[in-house]
Length: 318
Image 1 (tube, rainbow, N blue to C red):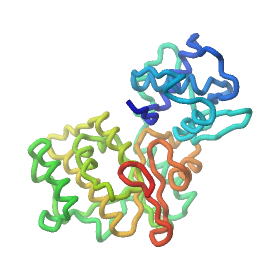
Image 2 (image 1 turned 45 degrees about the horizontal axis):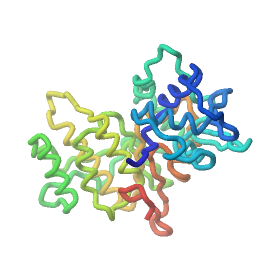
Image 3 (image 1 turned 135 degrees about the vertical axis):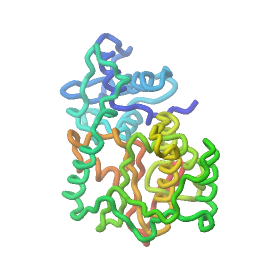
Image 4 (image 1 turned 180 degrees about the horizontal axis):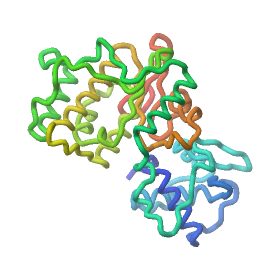
């Protein structure tokens, strides 16, 4: 079974560090590769395996399943964590101070990130974007971003619409002609940012993402989104709109497909992956938009005419 390091979240690392503090130690002790947590150093390879076990329940063989040293450092960096390797600091998106340590009574399955206030997080994120890029438009609409009727849907959207409809037997969930909005638009970058809260990670959304063609490319990691959809399985219990999950999933697909067709880059950020009030927002934003991907979010290339480089649905560059 392949190892999916992206299942490791900050609370899993905190729990692994707690277990280490309580006496769960590696043999032999680490010599030159350490995870940085506040003013402490933890054996990077050992904590990586322990955090993976906490996250997924699978215990790894540190001698067989993965390597230490430079490989471990690169995994931690992709996950956003800082390390020390051969006395040199390798920085991730988190600072050492961003990572707390759970106390013994902490229930790590109750993620603090999940309780972050989404409205406040979006306000802070917008301020960070404005400081970095200047003018930012919220709830942006475009003439081309309109829900199509069934007769004008292309093959991809038609298949998605049909498959979502079969999920619970709700076949008339879309409203043709409805104008869709985008969370943030950065004119200077021709860039749309969608901030996906928990309700976006539903089974209908996973169904829609499964139907994205292999040759389609997007500026976010579709595989990561599918895994989160199948893990969270969010359900909207609004009795006034029993088709809300189907509608939201389909409308997200329209945004993805139409943005690419109209020369836009669309990046998705999952709520809870970052605490914008506490972390270094500028560094995270630039890492998401212009550096190697972390937290499952792929990097876009802003020029549509020159050196176009985006991420396919398998998360590989094309």
